[in-house]
Length: 313
Ligand SMILES: [Zn+2]
Image 1 (cartoon, rainbow, N blue to C red):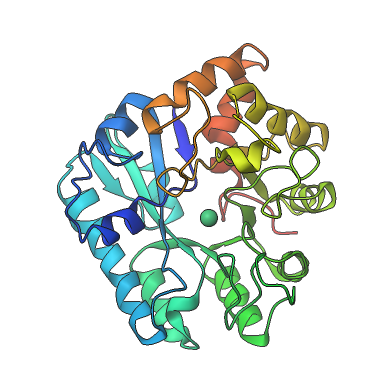
Image 2: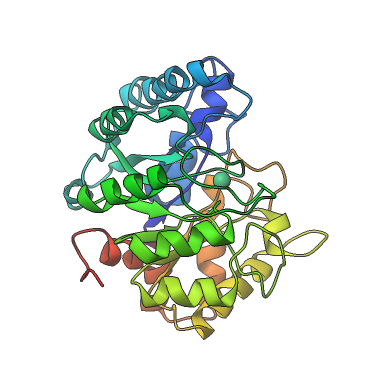
């Protein structure tokens, strides 16, 4: 079964290693071309993530460096990997190709310069999360004690996303910023978050937040990071599926997807340790849900709710 994974951090890993880890088949990466192929991943999102520890005036260059690795190492050296730069490109994938697209995790790297955001869009960014865990000029992330919402600049960015058919990712936002985004975003998504009802981690969504996302035609992609799956101890595939069950109970059966966070997490769910192992999750889902429902979680729900495919509420 084809799979679309909405979040991985392999570009940040490659940047840290100065491009010296081969994307094709490195043992050190959770996401490689070989592992995507083995795992049946048809489309992989590649996050641009610039660490808050990088000096402000170097951040945009770091983002560009990660995009460089995407086009040279991921796409350039693996002829079957195909860059997807528009939502229509998702329908043009040929048999045997694996699609890859860019997302932005935190807008720190653009400073206060909207032109830099246009450049990132031109280079293929299709989803933007305003923050990682820290605060920036657009909004507060979930780790910022102040817990404020969007700034005027943050609102301008959501407007830009609306006008350019870019997803607005709420996964790392403070709760107040989440509600501000939901007020104005045409294409909201949580690319890698689970349910707070089952695991009270700050990165997870309350039932009110999940319900609002479903009401606004948004998507929630469940994340494979054990601390976001269970309160403590090891996490199993069943524990992850409990989050899918819970989101289904809130009416989200057609709006749930997958967002592994591979290469951004140090702990792993047992039997779901890298991109080659997605079939273990799919097989377990098939024992509990209909084939159509599982296809929905794996890829179809996302395709159906892409910008341009849904009525704007
Ligand atoms: Zn993240």
